Amino acid sequence: MIDWLQIVILALIQGVTEFLPVSSSAHLLLPSEFLGWPDQGLAFDISVHAGTLCAVVFYFRQTLFGLASALMPGSGLDRSECWTLIIATLPVLLAGFLLKELIAGEARTVVVITTTTLLFGILLGCADWVSRRGQRRHTAIRARDAFLIGCAQTLALIPGTSRSGITITAALFLGYHPNVAARFSFLLSVPVIAGAVFVMLTSDHISLSAHAGAYYVIAFLVSGCFAYATISAFIYWVSKIGLMPFVVYRLLLGFMLWIGIVEGL
Image (cartoon, rainbow, N blue to C red; front, side):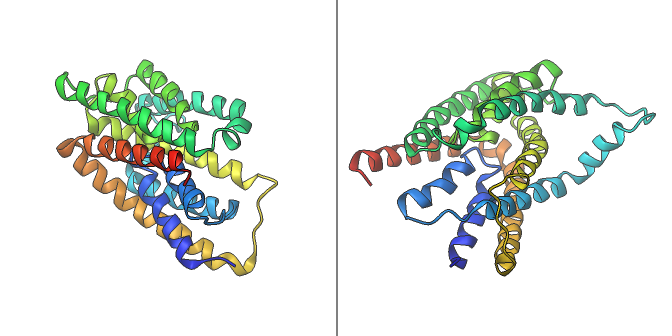
């Protein structure tokens, strides 16, 4: 029996947290750990990830169309941003292939999530502090820096890290303006999320049922709509308020989780 309320809440969580530096995987795992909610299954995961993928593609549709056009033979258009995205994507593809069993099993624990929530929250705070006091580059990401950001992105395979959080953190440490860092991080999410959806679609564990189709559609729409709103709001506000609110949130969440672990909740 599928619970409508749980479907909507989990899809909302995915949509909001996918593009914020707070870790969507952690927030999706916590309800099952502390509230006893059942795993909604691989089909649900595909639905919500497809929703967030469509949201980021639609938001950056003009940019992505330009990048696709630049890759066409004889286009004569600048392909530098295409190459930086490709360079930044390769490390996580390799790491995901080599470590997929570990990621799917031993690493998905509350202790790991709590540790990474705190650790990478502190790191994000340091990056924000460095960014505010240094000279910020408003230019496009360079190839060497793209590789370093891509290497940092592999850490997001550990639950609780946050893919957007670690890539933005790396870009800020490299001297880029928060808007440039956020834009590159969101564009970088397209091949990563698309790859994750592809892997899930080809999994032997996927089970689709006709009677649950409406639930998957709702999950897709809810995650997509909230993801689009989150992207829009984050890009608008990040240069105005910085990343410290997310640092504070991560630290508070991490400390509450540690208390829960100690108390045996």
